[in-house]
Amino acid sequence: MKRIWQGILIASCCLFVITANAQKKGKPFKVIGFYTALHDQAHISFVHEANRWFAAKAKENNFSYDSTNDWSNMNPAFLSKYQVVIFLDTRPDTPAQREAFQQYMENGGAWMGFHFSAFALTPSDFPQNWDWYHNEFLGSGSYGSNTWRPTSAVLRVEHPEHPAMKHLNSTFKASPNEWYRWSNDLKANKDITILLSIDSTSFPLGTGPKQHEIWHSGYYPVVWTNRKYRMIYMNMGHNDIDYEHHTNKDLSLTFGNKEQDQFTLDALLWLGKR
Image (tube, rainbow, N blue to C red):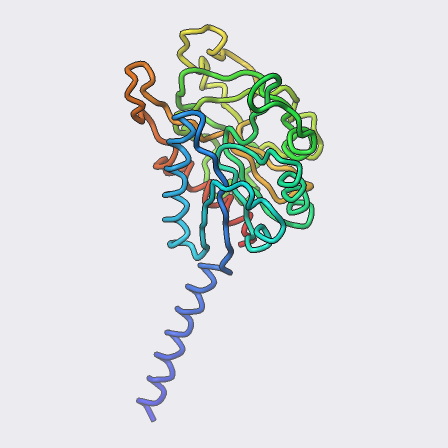
């Protein structure tokens, strides 16, 4: 009888551990990363780095990760297979692709966007010709300016209660990046919750040589979400590249920063409804 009770106890302990591990992993979900990776070596470098990182994190955290550079997959049938969509560098351009993405988001889909996915400048190869995306969904409007060259910045947590921020200190040092300024005032948008901004201890930010590409003051949102959608945008995603010596070698990476990696993963798990 004693052995029977010992067996029951051991089985119960094993079941508890299995259940706890299953709860830790959470319900599996599927993620699809869209990218172009054609126009700028800094963005191309980030895309390849991100695809490796997300694939590795998928194995560790019980979700699946696929990626594609075929934007014709931006259609309802394809998107219905995935719970989270990521834009790694650009955005859909055809009316049908844009309509499919808007419907996906309005029907409860989730989205994460990096750096150049929010870029819009008229005139340019990426004009501001999609008002729903840039003005309502992102809220940022058009590109305003940027720092140069890519440098680290100290970021400040604006809403520590958000699940994506739960493992961060009040400030942390981000990976080197080209930081963007936007035409719209995100603070004035009632639908936008700014999660990270550039801390004043970062100034001056940038090294030039052009003086207007060095920021000395101001308020600059870096990561935010829109309360009307399940989404999060983060301005990270521009690696430093050796353009000067024409080697196109990576001089910095986006991933590999403990704090930044953690909040990126926490943001993705939140989007996947963990």
